[in-house]
Image (tube, rainbow, N blue to C red; front, side, top):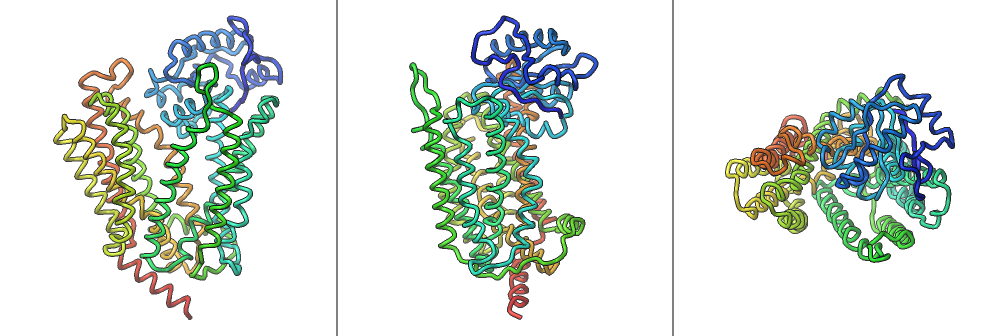
Length: 547
């Protein structure tokens, strides 16, 4: 992929220009484009900033098709990609030699990028990409996923090789890095730089976002996630830690999602707009809160299990062999990825089955809220207790089998009452929630099993590999819904055709069911850590550590 970032191809994003704008020749934009342009006309694809602004998207493509021709950058056509043809992105992108990420409202655009799975599709794209204005933001976020591939595993190795201190092995990282991660987060939202040049602002965004997400956040998240195995060797305690981690993240998301919009927007000339200055203040407040929370965690948590430093010679080949021959790690990664398949298809198809099949968008909001609340009310209180009694693998496997049965029953019954469907949806989500609540505790079991087998403690590396695998899974799965809709012939013109709406309903049941079955099979046949095996590993390690 050859990437160009620009505020506007015509160089005048805020002033009226000619009907057919001339591409900006400053900073050698046109010359650099010509240097990499094929010697023949290529198909162009314009990823819209607003997927529902059909007339504006068509006009933009008409204008820039001529602009590129005038600049001797020939295109056979410039096709807009918006809500009308978003489901064809998997076919259109490989056919296009040039892609333009159009500028606009950043949240709207990034939501559209995620909905069509653009980040995952770009992994195998080799053409020319030009990010325009807000499109730069999306491209930077995609680049960050590639950087994560190195920083996650690198931080895992750093943590594993760090020597324990009087404060433990993992806790000190919270104290060391809480300041840098909070400062980097705050620096991203600096409205005072609005008057700087566009190039400066893009560079500022790129540097601060990479520093925050791929470096400083990773330097806190990897040791934080690895620390659970050092807090307690008791599987019951670890299940409770996993539960409270899920509760904490859910409550934080609710505070941010509900509270921030109440103060971040202002009314200007009768229109509600996001206030840059308020976002700077909000970012500052949240950054201070983050530091306080990290320090509270540092002061209130104790590492009770000694985890010595990994002093073995660094061997990349040996490390990769250890990772790829670790059956427990591969099993939990496979199960987690299939769980993402089930969860993302349930959530993604909800946006179609409720309005298109049932004609009730209100039911979608109710189902979303109810499923979140029920996870807190049902899964959080009972997950650790059930896992302690029956085992984490056993609980996750059975819950996914029950979810499969629920999806199959719903598919067979095809309830005409939307609230009956909501009941099936929420019940399946509760089953999903049990696994999601205890999965962090299962990672600590994987870490123990690796030490039993290899004699080396690799908390950081194992957690980092798992964390990165989830990030890749989220990136590649984000376009799954669009691909499924394409299979049944869904488009803006056929959205309410009876055969298409029935196809939407069928997929909303079948796809999650497949995901749940795959999770159960991964846990049953690949993941070896039964309740008995976990207890044996805990006893083995206790005996070794007491020698």
